[in-house]
Length: 113
Image (tube, rainbow, N blue to C red; front, side, top):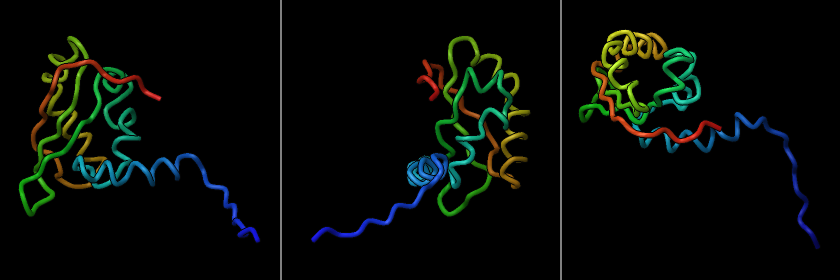
């Protein structure tokens, strides 16, 4: 006797989001959408040269955290000069004062899918 399977079609974004959400939460991202929407948050020019890594908060709070991004090559200096604008864009996107500081780690970026 074979068990009957129920096939439900789901969009790729829903499946990926479901898989990404637990990993995103471990890295401080309450919603994986910040990872998915990074190009629209900071602009395509910055998004092609940096990626969010984590948001670190003090214990017991989800405000005024430190956003860590990985930046490729010389983009780190430019990002440092634009830190205030990037923080404002991320906070506007999230709808509250989630990020207070930007930490930049210089290194190679993994290829985007």
